[in-house]
Image (cartoon, rainbow, N blue to C red; front, side):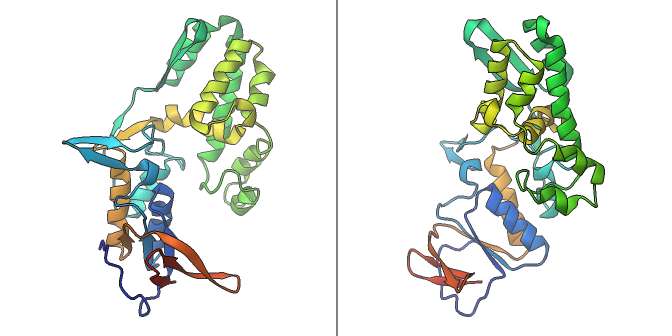
Length: 288
């Protein structure tokens, strides 16, 4: 049920109020709704999705921001979007992308990150044959991280208490990940690779999705991205990236939740140290 006409909420007490209908907010809301919570999502804009939304002009669909989509694999635990949609009773049709990125770099360095891992590694070794051993060792380390992540339920990759929470479910995977927690991708790359141009390539590999060079990109994150693009692959939703948000919205509504657009939150209402509601720009107060 979508509503733009905010009404007196004194008689309604929500179990949870989620601010923002970006993918993170919608997944949070859908997971709460699946568990039986009465959920309200408040969105300041007129469509859902945030940077993962889409808009239409003259019959064409344009993505607002993100277009390189991970998480649509069918196996393991890193297929986060597949599982979130399934929990909400929804599914997206996707088109597999044969290439994640096409790099056109200085000094004539050009390479495609092929969906096929062996082809990508083979192409990279052709450009840097003297670094064959180092290339294989670096990306094999990425796979070691990924295989640990793919064998356990995923929470926050940066949460220091994360491994403790799931240790008893997956002790070997947790122990395997523990050693990577304080290490960045740059340190691992330099351990095996000496060629400065190749190290710069590892930097741009990280920067394209983390917006940070390898020295500031956690190895756990790098291991997931550099491997999942070949495991689950990059898959584009038919109809545009905004379809993901639309499907999650539908799932939330089917589970009894509600999404309200053009509902900008002015402030969060606290009682002592507890958040108990929100106040909107039009001074309507909604409590949870």
